[in-house]
Image (cartoon, rainbow, N blue to C red; front, side):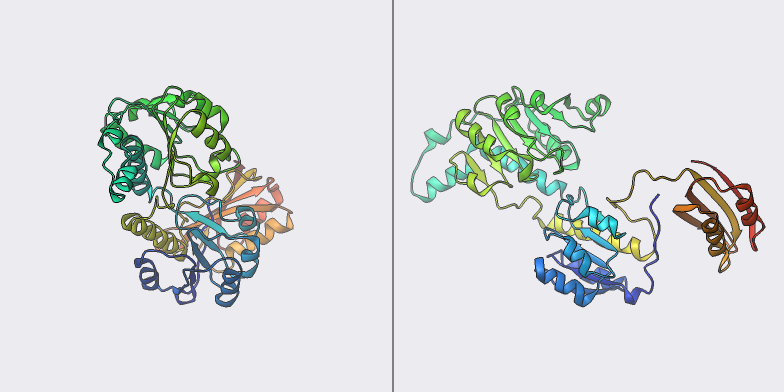
Length: 401
């Protein structure tokens, strides 16, 4: 259960935009009543200084790292929004320890990244970039570049099947490519409905595939997961594309495979040492860099801030506990008056009952409300009796979660 949080006076809501976002963001946030500080080049010490100076309640970043130093500098910081999908650049443990919400904007750049992925796929097959370079050098090499394999009927293996992976699959199938997928979350039923073949391991997925595209999030389990065992399972001359995170690929293993298996690689993320290889076609980490994607992400940022301002559930919050130590739920129906819940919480404190989560729902008319309070331990008969007999309480009950 995500706790709602009242942001207070709208004019007091300070928002720091520390990365370049779509132009609509600052204006839309101002329309909500927020005080916006737009400083899109902040990072490292400059970000810490800006946090201390402006003392924002909300911080919005794209690629800028948010460290423990930054969290310490932002005394009023309550919400960090990553204007993108991954949150590996944000100190999640530090934010959670300080009670700071971290939210992201997943899927908003899916179309843009998928389009670049397909662009890399076509380029690896038709060598469009090499064609352009040769022509600009005044060289006509139709015989050399006219030996493409073609993509129709060729098998694409997709590693990771979130919204980007799914968008890539749709595009690839429209080109006539059979698609096989490895994803921890994909079920046989979902794979059948989508029209793809589910594989149980990355190695199984890439075995015999003509092309491989990586779309996994970066975390402790996926860091370096696309390594020697995966590249050894790939067929010689296959195409390899990574538009997700460079760290999910073992760069040394990729470099070896480029040589030993004559792979061609289309990379939007990579180690600097690999970009000069003749079989590597690199782009400048531009997967999400389209106007459509920026505007979609911007709309999502505004939506998250608006939810926080209204005290509503925060969309896409990534650092809330999935489970708590709470053992019982105390339900209190009460008049909506000042001090009623404060008295209830005081009784719980005296009974040494710790509150983990709480939600108070107001009924139409504004006269009554119902509080659901998740607690550690069961209030005894005496404590429950005191709550029931408290002023302006209609009734109270308790049961195990």
